[in-house]
Length: 148
Image (cartoon, rainbow, N blue to C red; front, side):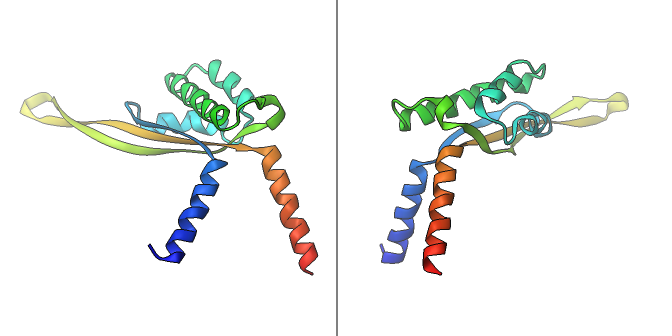
């Protein structure tokens, strides 16, 4: 492997250590319905988002709630001994992409047939840590002022 590729791979590995990702694949719900729930919690603090999802009536909210709990568990594994309240976790990124589509035929009047598309989706959720991001931002500001 060339040095350029090696350096970029090392950089990606370092970034992964501070990213807390959870993915939900092939959910048998239409992406449009899932996006309504995802839009509700985008940018919220993790604990507040859990409360909102718990009290939302939509069926997709239960799945996103479980996904958020999984992302928090991933954060706990990477940061043993740290408390969630002290680190101010928030939903940095959440996206809903369309998944595979099952195509079915439903009988219609006068010998015709209508196509039914049963949609599915993939949800990706990334948690961010406001405390770490503030420290990183301060370090970059200090670095730029020292260069001037």
